[in-house]
Image (cartoon, rainbow, N blue to C red; front, side, top):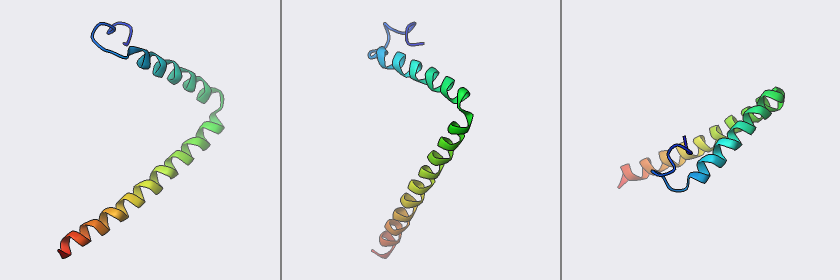
Length: 68
């Protein structure tokens, strides 16, 4: 996509780099399914922790807005 749209976009090199990285990561995942599954669990856990923290701060913010 980035090569065909070179005239319409700027910074196409970043799209190409991202595509190459995605392909390499895909091959790594296919060759290391156990490690990839473990990495997925860690990423999901980090997202859950961050989401929970954001929800707690949001709840306190809403609570303080309701009192004023």
